Structure formats: structure tokens, C-alpha cells
Length: 66
Image (tube, rainbow, N blue to C red; front, side, top):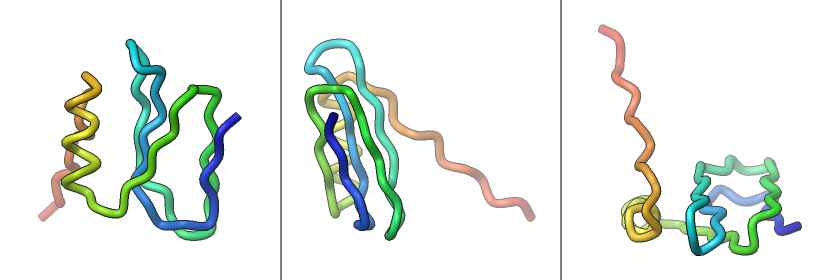
């Protein structure tokens, strides 16, 4: 089990094959995964580029309501 906690970072959990999970961890929160790889990023653009490189789908940007 891999874990990141008490940081504000973007993360990617993956198996180097066909599983790619990702998200943003807020300060004081924890993410755990059974995937063999758990990467953390402090730069959102680098995080997004790595998601694409791994074959994952980028998160959908929420549109603001007017």
C-alpha cells in the first residue's frame, strides 16, 4: 500500500500498463492506493502531461455557472 498525506499535491497512481487514477490532494488529506506506482506533483501542467504520457484521461474542467 502506498500513501501520500498532509500535503497539497496532484497525484497519479498507476501500474505501468492499463490503470491510471489521479486527483488533487488537499492539505491535511490522505490518498492510499494498491497500485505499484504513486507519483506526486507540485505543478499542475507537469501532472497533466504525465497523465497523457501514461495513457490516462485528463480531468474535465468544471464550467462556472453564471
